[in-house]
Length: 258
Image (tube, rainbow, N blue to C red; front, side, top):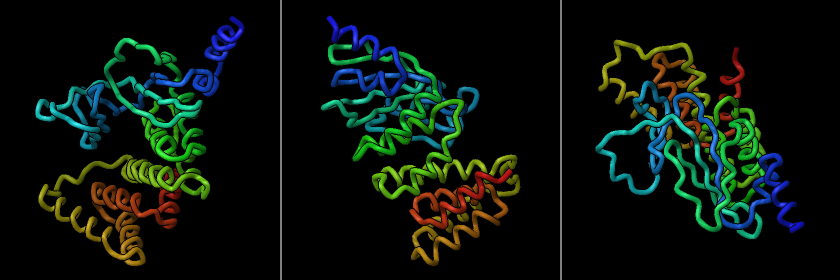
């Protein structure tokens, strides 16, 4: 009886305490997503969505048999299932949209939590958890509403004791954030044809395949000076894959620019 009361009280505390108090098995929570994020509630999450239409950036997980049917764009909530074993979070699964199935035995549903609290929990988990859990925890922080995560991503990317795959995930999402900042307030140039843009983006990809001492400085020059917002964003994407400190310095510069 005393143990049950202690568990109930812990489950009413802050999010880290609530997750820690949950027994081994699956722990569920939901929270609001930032604008432009949508999903089909199962295996697809899209970005830059607007008025029910999916944006160009789309992530699919596992099989996606209904691709041809288009993207049923549901703007949240984010739903995260954490797998606990031995008192530790070992894996995470992220969905956007849809609803949970009825909870079975071994499932603890924490309900809807605040998006900033969720982002803080996942960023802290990413900083300390080894293996898949740390790597998996970056993405659910990125999609959270009402929070700016890039300073924390920068700290993750620069912290040597953080797992390498987690740092690479942080760098990737930093690249996406920097790409948005670099193109803020601009529109796609109307006189760029689709073919011309494809050629330019292919050239940016070719630069990303060059030796680091040649490719990274070239990509940085493209990201700084190219007249096309799309090409600059593509250069920033590949810089986000480079794991190069010069790329991190550029992301920080762009994101701190007034």
